[in-house]
Amino acid sequence: MSLSKTASLLLASAALVAGHGYVNSIDVDGTTYGGYLIDTYYYESDPPKIIAWSTNATDDGFVAPTAYSSSDIICHRGSAPAALSAPVTPGGSVKMTWSTWPDDHHGPVITYLAKCDGDCADVDKTTLEFFKIDAGGLISETAIPGTWASDELIEASYSRTMTIPSDIEAGNYVLRHEIIALHSAENTDGAQNYPQCINLKVSGSGTATPSGTLGTALYKASDPGIFVNIWNTLSTYDIPGPTLYTAGSAATATAAAASSESTSTTTSSATESTTTAAAAAAVTTVAASSPSDPTDSSTSTSGVLSGSCSQEGYWYCNGGSAFQRCVDGVWDASQSVALGTKCTAGISEDLTISATVQRRQESHLRRHNARVNHMS
Ligand SMILES: [Cu+2]
Image (cartoon, rainbow, N blue to C red; front, side, top):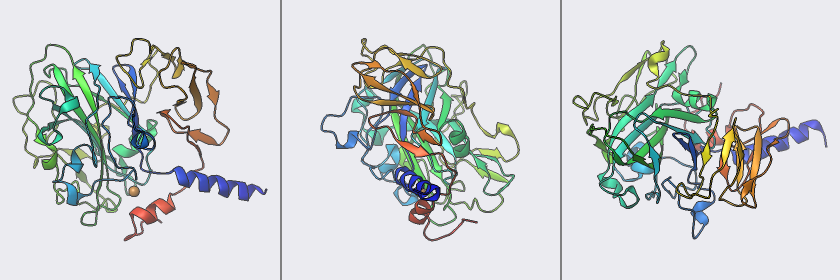
């Protein structure tokens, strides 16, 4: 077979696995949990109990502005609460890792918390009131359409790390994490929201109870950060949703959906949190399916897993370049992926290998961006 034929076959298979992505791995205070694997769990009669909410968005699709007042916007389409919660300390960190993200889907990355009245596993999502704890918008505008928090996320191996406010009261919370793609947002109803939720159990002795906003009231189709043309030069970008809550500011936090912070286009402080690219926690406990399972005690050094695992046959892709499998209850030896390929980072039932060849996702653009053509 000719080299060009091989290359085009590689491209074709890469295009098949290209998609928007979803959160498939979550690190909470150094412990790694598996996400809701939409490609597999949705079709299982008895999917594992996890900390991530389920959805029925099997198309890896989005919630459009016309649905901002529907419950779909809360934790994605057809979402239902997760059975488990991950323990976290006030001031602790949460790293959300996506399976992939298309590099042309530029936009903000925003994270909220909402307190559950009781166990989040039984919560009525329409009663959750969210306060924003982390947001990144337009980072720089040196070349249209600019560098966005979504681009930072791709750079950080499809991840973003945020801090739990150090002063919030103990209890059960839903964390709502979201990318908003703006590549077609110059059109009415052109923005694309991709919300993902997990359950957390915050410990400690904090007393702050930030007021929040119902999920169905977070955004309006006309918000300046939603209906926006990123193909023009922007001097500022207003991150949509209520104001950012920072520890110690409980008295001034408001639920006003109308107010939003503005990010400067020239300073790196436009990002409202630190994004930690280094995932090099010396020792990481892995509890992909059952965080409370005492028999599940894998450890990780430089991302390589060792020790016991609970999801037999599952794969772990370490940063895109190496993989391991859960065999007979333990993680096997780490192997490198073939030259010119990468795996989709995180723990999943199937190992997804794709070509690392840089390319525009043309079929994807045709599907989602049919009305306009921004390809230069
Ligand atoms: Cu798309």
